[in-house]
Every structure is written in structure tokens, then in C-alpha cells.
Image (cartoon, rainbow, N blue to C red):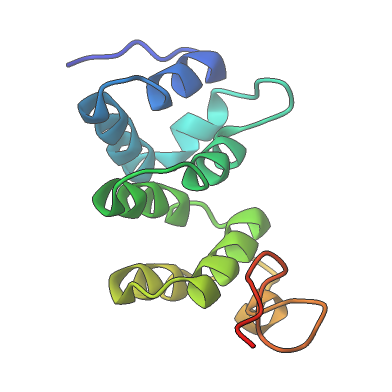
Length: 132
């Protein structure tokens, strides 16, 4: 399968394709050559990182979610670091936790700067329910 992705709109369309095979192939290509996907530009002020983070909130299988996180892990970007810190706190899946915690922080960031950041100080992310 060969896709002609020349713009961010093409890329986002491929990432939203009904075929899981197509979407997985695109995620693998992003993980292998992240700079190429980023170079495709933006759609409505969103780049590939925004799209991947957005898609991670959609319902999908665990293997697909892991592929999505691997694609995101290729980007040394503050948005990814912040998102991965939330995932690390919220997930119960050890493979996902390992994937998001082994990624290096973005240049100039420290893992402690974003890990478990919340307003309450109890280690939960703002969207996580209070277990009490």
C-alpha cells in the first residue's frame, strides 16, 4: 500500500481512514520519520502532534493505542511530554506506562516538571476522578 501524503490534510485523512491497516501503517511511518510528518504543516493550526494527542482520546484497541504512543514518542516536544506525564499517572497497563516513562523529555524540560502535575497536589490529573 502506498499513500501520497503531500499535506497535513492528507496525513490527517490517512490517520482517520476507516482501515486499521492504513492507520497503523501511517503511525509506523510517523514513528520512523517524524520530521517528515511534521514538515507537512498544519490544518486549522493543528500539526501532527496535536492530531495524534487528539486521537489518543478516542476509543481504540490497546495495540492501536500503543502504536499511537510510539508515534508520539518520536517527538521531543513539550506537548508530548505533558501528555505522557498524564498517561503515566492514569494508565494501569505496564507496557504503556513503560513506553511513556522511558521517553526523554523535550529539550530544556525535566521529567519532574510535568509528571503528575495537578492543582490539588494529590498526584491525580485534573480529569482523573477522586478515588475517595
